[in-house]
Length: 422
Image 1 (cartoon, one colour):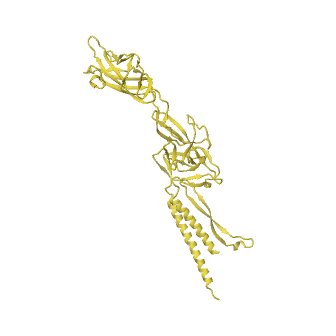
Image 2 (cartoon, helix red, strand yellow):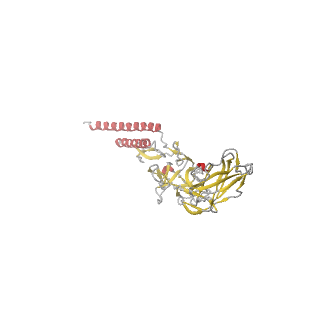
Image 3 (tube, one colour):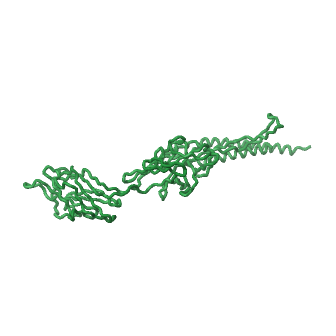
């Protein structure tokens, strides 16, 4: 009988050492939760045996219980590295079409080739859909969607109006080359550029070339300039005429043009839609003795925004920012919690699945009742304490050696009995 009692102790100690070895092997696994082996004694009781005379029959492994204590929080530079500070699991789907949901504490997410936010195993992060204001419009596992980053934002708006305020140097000399040629700097005095957009949202450069045509004389105190405007290689015209006259009085105040310069319609190489631009000099446009300077320039066109960055706040709202200044809320990270997390089934790769013991998943969002805060740029490491595990390993080894000694002792007693001669 003592052979089997010692054998049960050996098996129990071996199970504990295997558990500890598994914990130590995953000390660097993000989102890993250690386990603890729990034992129970075995008593062969009988109504005919007095309680004071009962002898135990060894030990059994009662449970290999998971420990869901918070792991160490590691700062990273990736805004899609997420950690739950408190209770809760991320919900992920193995694929878009999959009906099953797995749960994880490993929040190391990235963007795949299809712009979906996935983990290192390719599983899709689940979020609640939101409206334009960021309010959640639907909850529940059936309403959850895979988080996907859009490529662009907004609708392109072609530039129709440009306003520029500048100062032209009153001391500028007349160009040495009389005939204007934008490729010949000696045929004009200054130039200024403004970015404008066509109907497709493509950026173009509007360049204005300023050429002084007359200086004040004894008979005429005014100064005149001529401005030539180009979009790319195309010169803009007004009623078929290139170049617009500008006039300044002796004080440097602009007296002409007094209204917007309405250029004729034109098309570009990237867009066949006709486009017309009205160009206005701001009221602060002057001709003074100070250096040429563009004080301000504005235009009303708008390009399609290209995604530039993604942030996640502590409530799990995913915000995308775009090159045109747009911001867009893409969803709210869905978290899950369970009445008995220790009953979750381990699947490997830091995944868990709900069971009847764990109970059904309670879904919600970060920083609400029953759920911890979400931390962006942070990832949760393993909750394994190396020092603690090594001490436990030594204790398990001693237990194994003690049971081995008890087994050896039982063997020696048996041999002694077998060698008794009458």
